[in-house]
Length: 403
Image (tube, rainbow, N blue to C red; front, side):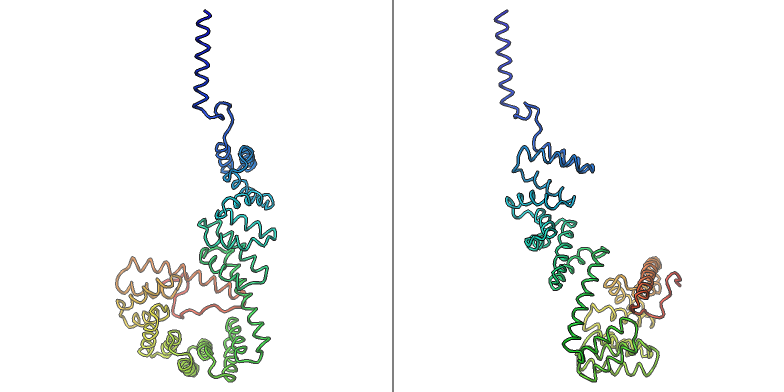
């Protein structure tokens, strides 16, 4: 019996030794590994249990204080809570070991900006330029733009804001911030112009442009004329005066004649320009001179094939002349170039109808109705702000009453 007991004990010792060789220390003792703590923390965070997640992440750090994954998770969690002081400790450790970690750069930059650390600009710039994560990149960009605005450096804020608008074209917060920035820059330059050259032709032109935006076209025309009395070769002024004159009285023959004269002066001073050619075409169209209007639109199109008003003008006249197949080429370009142009949608639908492409025409008319309704709401908002919105063609049906 003693021999059997000795054999059994030797066997157990051998098995124990074998297990110690095969299994890691954690499995032998029942301890949880760093990776298991991180995984549990991630699951808790996904289940919206941040306190449990923090406990797991801190347990991972307790096991391995230099583990960058654990430090990164803790830093991000503190950042999400708004605890920038706590987040900085972990994020700084990550960046000291991995300076190119873009996520850590972005989070650290946001915290540094909120804590007044001058390192914020460098970190936010680098993260915003290189980050692939769209949400985090937006956060870094917003903080960077705000940092420049706090410093009064609108020239540095501008390219950041332009990129933010490009990345988030339908984000109302970004669009609102952009409008504020652009308005501030416009006000700053106008104030400077008023200080350095209050009696100049450019000051008169600036006043005229503000009156145009507020809907006072006759008042604007007087200031444009005052600007041109000071400098008859003032670039842009003859064209802008012509627009104000014609839009104020589009069906008045005298206004059309004066507008044409100013546009011819604009061509002499500003050179060939598709916008000027389009306005000459518009004046001719109002006067019923369709051949002349078409020639000016075609000239504008030759100068710039991407000019929407030229595409639309050619298409409009060709549809009126019952040449829908030819018109379709230009109107299709206009719709592609400016999908929210209500008149382009309407003219395109008319051309499709004339070609008996009824299903496509109905689809375009439906889109036109949506776009026209949206434009009506924009005009209402502009009226509330006492601002002028862009005029539309008078022969388009109102929203909700399609032919």
